[in-house]
Image 1 (cartoon, rainbow, N blue to C red):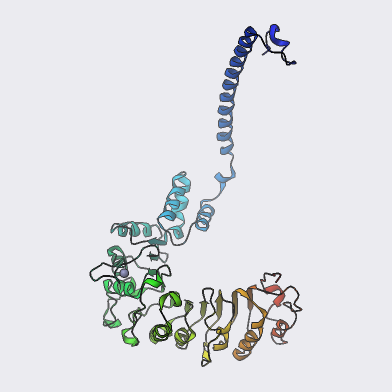
Image 2 (image 1 turned 135 degrees about the horizontal axis):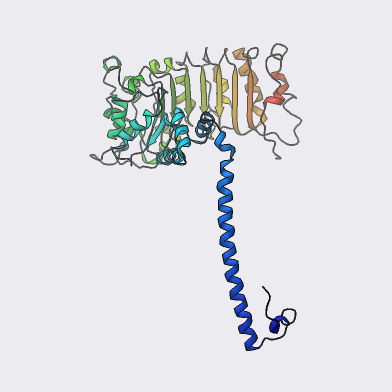
Length: 439
Ligand SMILES: [Zn+2]
């Protein structure tokens, strides 16, 4: 559009327009704005059509449902909270084929988590959810991490662990492979055990063998760290009265996460009296054992001597070093141990107490660990006679001083390589995942 000739002389000058020229220019601007708006609308419509047509040629349409299903499994959590479940549902709402892919991915429907805030009707939703998982093993999680329970405070207060839907799921159906229970205290654990009939006074053999709880393969018991200082650790020193006495004989995988020791016990006397007392008959059956604890070794290590069938042991020290100043303990033989993982500690003193002649994999994740533990590592491998068979050694987050002459291939680490082991154990230089830091 061209301006009328009577104002065109203003375009390239700084002359002040007259009133008539102002009105003329304003009319021209209004006209230009209208045309721009019309063309912009046309452009948007064309771009929309372009997008729709381009989508027809999208390679996404050619992805097989099986591949789509695998992608969905990778992006979703194995045990799903209400939020995670909504994600799965939303994936299925995209289109018919995506819905078909979510139903094809049975693993999307194998794990479910709920909290004390969920109503009784969660039972039906869990059962319905699991139906889409086919015959795959199912996992259940009851998480009281964000709920403070008053059952220890006042007599008569109901415990958040006494959730009727949870009890029905563990006593009636469907069959479960794994169960994670997060409770606030030993009292909450007792309340939960009571509602499903896991009384320490009731012998194992008298229970029905058809209950999901009695046929559980894997159990994770976590004592919530959030309110640890609010509760007393109340467990009997008599193993027959221990809170762990009624664990079912079917459990071969057990994860135990203890509350932080300093927050749980008021003083040294309480700490020395604290009892765990997981029955030997439970420990003997375990093939996989994960312990997350900063408790003294005298409290935790005795459990390991009963773990004669253990194949995988993971010890997470929760960024503490409770064994650092501990006295001597008898050597604990773990004859079938294949994989040993130590997590989140500055030292590996646990190795001073273990003997694992069948060890294949040793995996250490430290928090600012220093080179000083090398002797402990070498001694452990020698005491266990594990060097010839060892297949992998990973040391993560090891702190190496920038001016140190030591490197993964120089002493003391080079001592780990022997003529016998060099053909089977990869060079440490390639196995160590080390974060080098300048001190
Ligand atoms: Zn409670």
